[in-house]
Image (cartoon, rainbow, N blue to C red):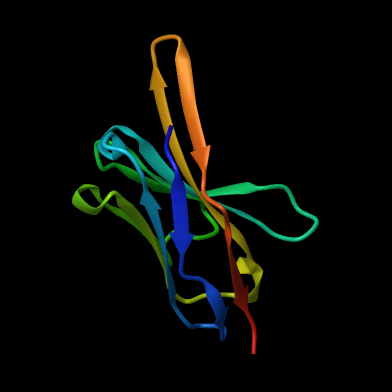
Length: 119
């Protein structure tokens, strides 16, 4: 079992920056692929970024070049640095931990944190 606790988020003006953090419980954090998703009101949850257990990263086209995902395995923490924020980035952001082993998939979610981009 993995518990994910998120922090960060809030209200920021267009063009501004925010950093989200997600701290995981347990001792196997480094074996999980960690991701960020977001969900705007009335919309489906969409994938934003992922960093694998090996450190490879990938981003949705909508955030590529503006957002950076990183992880600190010593702190059991994954980050999402968001720069050049746009109003369309407004959403609830969710941290995700995923691990696939033979015969089973383990998938955990953070509690969500609101990001609002506006003046």
